[in-house]
Amino acid sequence: MRKFIFLISLVAFLSCGSVLSLQDRLISEHPEWTKKQIELIKRGEIEVGMTKDMVKASWGEPSYINKTDSEYTGKVTAWSYYRVFGSNIKAVSFKEGIVSMFSDSHPNE
Image 1 (cartoon, helix red, strand yellow):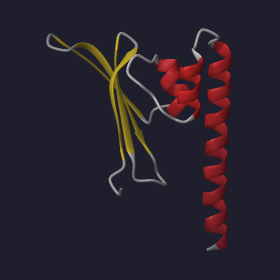
Image 2 (image 1 turned 90 degrees about the vertical axis):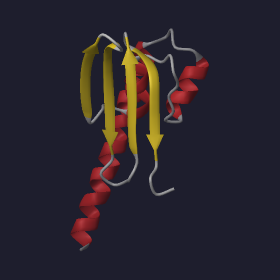
Image 3 (image 1 turned 135 degrees about the vertical axis):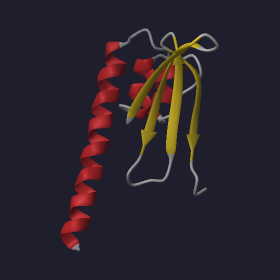
Image 4 (image 1 turned 180 degrees about the horizontal axis):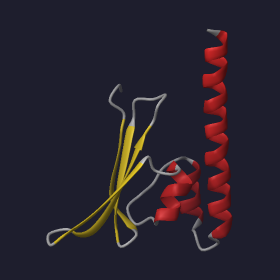
């Protein structure tokens, strides 16, 4: 049991580190991002109008990417995030590379 808890803790720790290094790298690559945008990203938040790189910096790499093209919605890319150690599911939709809508649900709250 101790080994199992240690392994879970190690995976969680390493996952957090990789998101932070991705966040730091993306922020440094985009000096055009505003102070407000960077503050949102550092809090793990996003908003309509953000770019794909901003979402990656805030939420990390998506678990799943779906691209659709219809006459009603046009070209839409949707990213989904599933967390193994949490029950929240996040989703974000992009039109032309910009966040058009998103959800950050926490079913147990």
